[in-house]
Length: 189
Image (cartoon, rainbow, N blue to C red; front, side, top):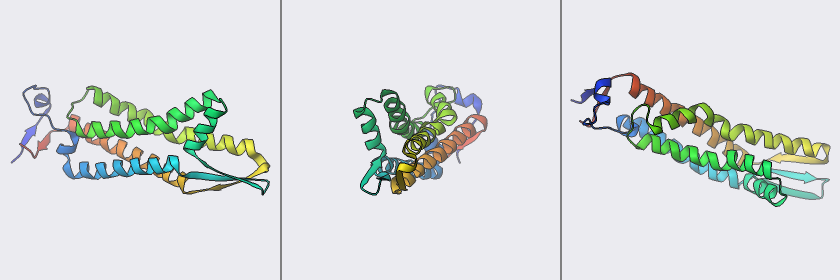
């Protein structure tokens, strides 16, 4: 039989600490698979064409998130380059790898990883989606009636990465709260 870990045992430095993954093995495997899927869809989403801009029926330009950020850099639009590059390219990868670390590294409440999880849960959901939507709106407003915009699969895979990351973040947060608030049976002891 497994031993019961209560809050007094959680503060005992001699007590073995287990990661959220090991404490919830089947859920941990599912979360890992979702995080890997989120990483793959994020890579595809930022590199695949998001839309095609057709200008005056003569010129056609396929735009990916990477190419859009590159164009902002080339045109020296520094503020947009930094905001979109940071929030739509860098932070999503940081969020996914942070969630993997939080899931696999043993930690207790009020540790750095637990505070990172709280920050991700609170602010992380806005890091990718809002800035991306604003960028699309900016493109649409600037073009107006001059161009036709056709959406491609890159937009959907990027949105899928956002949703998968939000789901896994929420799930890991719930597992951490369960660990901190309840007595947990530890199957490995």
